[in-house]
Amino acid sequence: MARILVLDGHSGAALAAARAAGMAGHWVTVGANRGLFAAAKLSRYCRLGFDYPVSTEDTNAFVDSIVEFVRAHTIDLVIPVTDWTLGPISQQRHRFAGLCRVAMPSQAALDAVSDKYGTIRLAGSLGISVPRTMLAKSTEDLEKWETPQFPLVVKDRFSVRWIKGNAVFGSVAYAYSAEDLRKLVAQRLQLAGDVLIQEFVSGVGIGVSCFVAGEKTYLPFQWQRIREIDPRGSGSSARKSIPLSPPLVSLSAKLITTMGFEGLAMVEYKKANDGRLILMEINGRPWGSIGLPIACGIDYFRHLIDWCLEEKLPPDVSSYRENIICRRAVAELTHLSALRTGRPANWPIPYPNFWTSLVAMSVPWHPGMCYDDVWLSDMRPGIAGITNWFQSRIKKKFLARR
Image (tube, rainbow, N blue to C red; front, side, top):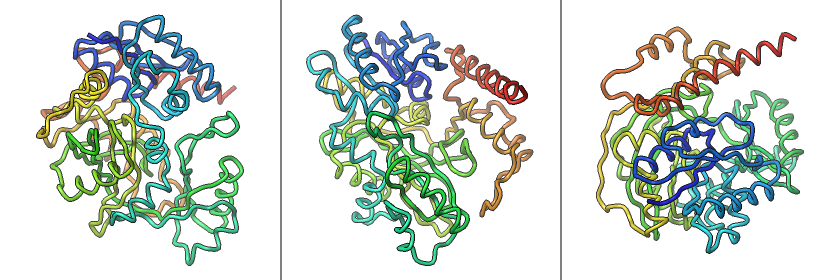
């Protein structure tokens, strides 16, 4: 039995990690930012909760606290789940040498998968369909984009980056006119120094995930989005497992291994109206919907732990249950809340109807359906998450009226 510290306890992936590690018989502790609601700390598999300094406010204090906790509790493996903790720990990875293992790729590989612009360029060179993308470093660069078709996507090159010790969080926005575009680009340039401009791609989200070690991929898994938290585009609130597409799996594996990446990764695509699968991005870390492959029979975290601690590789051949639907209750509520607000002005494609979606989502369970957060065998995280969702919104409305 190993002693494992899972970070980012507020995230759905952390809850999946804590449950997977605990069910495998390991001693599990879950850490989270001070003052942040963290459902994973409420899991029956979490033996000890841990609050650390906010990683994006003081990276040194954050890493200091992790090192101290690891020493005090003889931790064998640390599993960072989000970019917010993975980045600072990777920058100071030398401090963990000889102390414990950390589930993360090399710095070079982490830099590669974190760079959305670099990913798009590499994918294009490998023959993978990508959206038309430009890296803008000044508003004058906008003149290079000939005959723009709106809307255009304006998004950061990194999910989070540190500039002079300060965290700059990535964002995604939509420009519906030349004036919108110039304004959004100017705002992001001031904060981040550069920004991506990308053609808008509508379609269904498709994901391919796998475990990577030694330039070889294992445990391929494929899923399709049913609903997104933000109907304009975001992580999924519901998704289902679908059969593997060997060509897509092969291309995804080539992209990931070319980067020198090792660990858990998910490659995200959009299936456009013309049938093309267009690359969106790579998650070179545990992703929010990782509960689905686990429910379908591929326990990525258990294999990650075995590899990190024992250098044990997964089997070459694996299978999983198809057509399994996995939902996240709190994300489904957020999806409905977004629909209740109504279709955004100028939104170019059909927008889900609130009442139709409510009816479709009202059946809480049927054979082949499961939840990321609500488990009968581990109820507290799911119930607390739903309660916190309502409480936070009631509090927000109350403060808005004051």
